[in-house]
Image 1 (cartoon, rainbow, N blue to C red):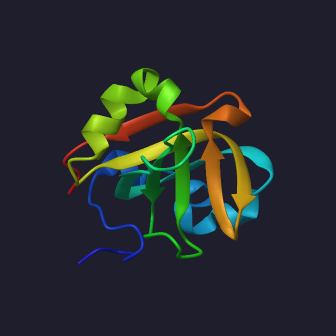
Image 2: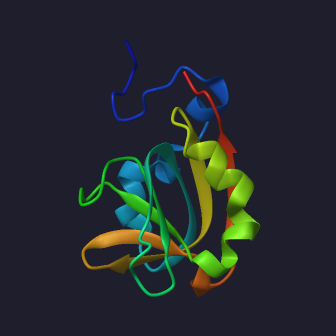
Length: 125
């Protein structure tokens, strides 16, 4: 049993992430540069859309209001390739630092908005 079902891990490094940086509190930081972390729930590339964006959903599945998305454009794929391949296998968590914006009612970090830093964990339990 997890202490908080929104934070389903026993990993001590992830449990040490401050409550304010957890995906379900991300709305408190919209329109700021901040850090958001949580489990990766989906990785999807919109191959038929201009720029072929890759959407990495953190926390909950889009269109949930608790979904935070990292948007990586296809022309920058190789800068993010190792991370994308690692988190696409399931059981991964991601922490993103950058400018958090709102788009169509959801929260997102868009790499085209500027500096983005990230850390990921694989096979999280």
